[in-house]
Image 1 (cartoon, rainbow, N blue to C red):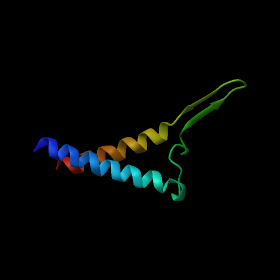
Image 2: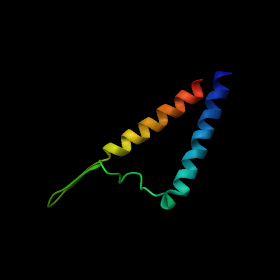
Image 3: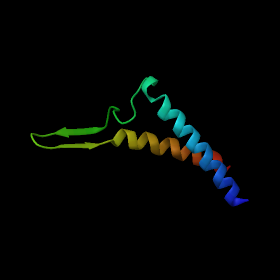
Image 4: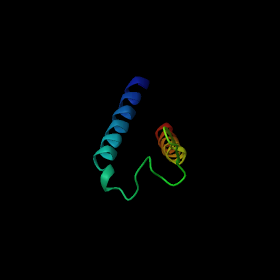
Length: 70
């Protein structure tokens, strides 16, 4: 029973991810370019750390895991 539930959860997550990737250009925000993401550009290098994006993804995944564990 545990393996079946895990496979269903994985399938739903893949469907949601596929829909997000398909419609990412039409969303009012661009994931990975949110305010709060750190981008530092020097003369010969650049550094990018998606801090706000990581927080948003973490909250969404935490809520989804909480819903599916109930």
